[in-house]
Image 1: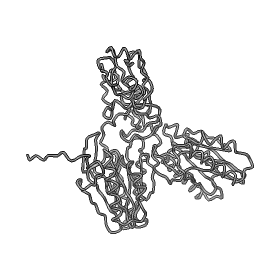
Image 2 (image 1 turned 90 degrees about the horizontal axis):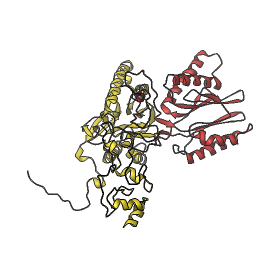
Image 3 (image 1 turned 135 degrees about the vertical axis):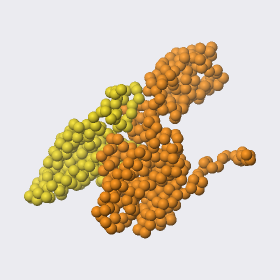
Image 4 (image 1 turned 120 degrees about the horizontal axis):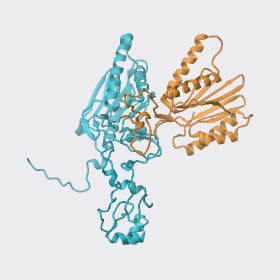
Amino acid sequence: MPQLSDLIGSFVDDKICYDTGYQAPSQPATHTTQPIVTGSSVLGLKYKGGVILAADTLGSYGSLARFRDIRRITTVGKNILVGASGDYSDFQKIQELLEEVVAEDYCLDDGRTHTAKEIHSYLGRVLYGRRNKMDPLWNTLVIAGVENGNSFLGQVDLLGTQFEDDTLATGFGSHIARPLLRNAYNENLTEEEARKIVLDCMRVLFYRDARTIIKIQ
Amino acid sequence: DHEAIRRRSGARVRRASWKRRRSGEGVRVGSNGRASQGLSIDTSVEGFDKGRSRENERTNDRTIDRSGEEGDDERTRRRGRKRKGEGERGARRVESASRGLSIDTSFGGFDARTGVWSRGKGKMEAPTKMKEVLTGTTIIACTYDGGVILGADSRTSSGNYVANKVADKITKVCDKVYLCRSGSAAHTQAVAGYANLYLNQHAIELGDKGCSVKAAANIVKEIAYGNKAWMNAGMIIAGWDKKEKGKVFVVPLGGTLMDVPFAVGGSGSIYINAFVDRNWKPNMTKEECKSFVRKAVSLAISRDGSSGGVIRTVTVNEHEQVKEFVTGNEVPVYQDEIQSKGPPQVEFVSV
């Protein structure tokens, strides 16, 4: 007899809970799966004339530090960076989608490529659409880029929340590093200063986040 | 002595209830679960148990897994604190059904024993996974100078029963490309079947060129990622192709695709992660690599209950694909697996 706990794949009360993503066949096919190979935080900081992103290179498998040399920040075209925390397989899927966007740009060959703001919009809509289908891409993405000397920094998360800011931190970093970055930010940072701030925040995260390693990208 | 017991067990024993206990009304054992010395345990008191209330025991729910239960688990964890719900007379309040087997899951993650992911929302039941047939397993693949060697144990377990003790977990999906399977036996066999189908079609188009390991791994990844909600399959794809020589790819549970020089997978892999990290070197010889793989699998078999049987290896390089196995009696054993502390008390009796 179908119960409420069957409809929602991870409902927890005092009773038994199956948290395996299994659904009875009579239900419509909705997949709210869980992140499996996960990346921890991504930090982003604007400085004068650019943006800097940082992430560690760990793919955690639960509490196991399984893959210790993954790249969680990828480039899109020539001047856009996309970093991701959350499920790594969904990020690999997002990378494939972004490659299609770049390929489309290349084929159109009209002298324009997608800007960071456009990629930010695109990914926001993709992630929001997936969440409405109850099948999210379980990531929090940081999109960074520079156009005409103006730096852009935006975030999209698995719910489709989309916004821009001068400093960003995802995952655990949103609790620990965001206040540090906000304190340190001013409009006239140089690249060296920005790098130093971001590395300092990564060090604090290495101290305080149990799912990080010392190696960063 | 009462004082010594109190200090040792760390329990806060109230004198008044102690007196009542001695008159036989009820018993509170020290919070480490052991009855105090010199005290008679009156088990007829309502609620006395080893961590379960009577209400719980009466449940007919067969999905509660009691196999790993020990009475002392909860108690050792709550040493020194007064147990919740314990009333004056030492009788326990009725506990909710969720306390049958509780694991502290406040941090979330993967429980390898029951194959359950938890979101860390607090204590939850961890039922056995419908007794489905799992290849609770150890699989490994690593590159050496000139090719790859894949290794696996041969035990397929269905709960605590060994369904197949000579399973072959290394499946060929394409010429010179093999797949090591771990997780649900049904899922991985299906994935291997589909991969075989698509790769055969692909190979017809390629002709003499031969299938690349990357293509095989990508197909496995597409299947795993596309069905990630249903599937429980962790796989290692390894082989040799002309362009990239020996390659190892790993597709763990969610459908990530990782290109790695060596990989371990399955429930037994956690025990040998550190060993493999320490002892794998790039550009080993074939013999070195084979003995490394065998040693790793035997160490995992030694510690993991879901791995056992024979150690199978497949060597793939430019010239050959060799399938071998080490018979069960030749699998190395370690430490106290074989030696006992005293002289052997064995008497051979002819029948």
